[in-house]
Image (cartoon, rainbow, N blue to C red; front, side, top):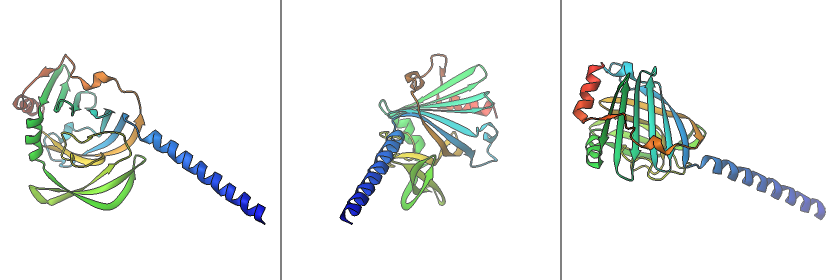
Length: 227
């Protein structure tokens, strides 16, 4: 009988060790600092003048704490965004046929824009799985429109420092996997559908030389011209 219990304990120990080992492997594969996140994208206000130009997907490339996001409408209207927390800049790029414009915002300009979309973030005990990652739920309340609330989900299972620089979610210590953003008065909601480990070209985080640098007013006029 003692021999049987010893064998049983050994078997349980082996099973536990195997599960723990597999779990560690899976977690290490998920806890990445470089790769690609694909998001489903949806316009909040379907009657907005820019709604027809809005894409249905966003691809975000990340390398440590640098981000490059791209959205495209039929390959004709392309918008790209580069986030660089090291030099505190946010670059917006738009391409329509052969026209390529870029807006470079410094920390002051970023904060001025964020003040227009300031959020109160309320932590909850709820969670859900998004794109294979455990995500915590936050309730976001618009400070200038307290009756407007929406759900935000973020994960701590990606190895990225300061992932929310230049966004209304900077106080969240994790990568947002479901969230809203507002640029040039167009509000959209993004929900991650996949995360892949991938080597990302450093050039993605640099402004291409063939883009013309414009002011915020010039960028707004450009958008008005394509409505």
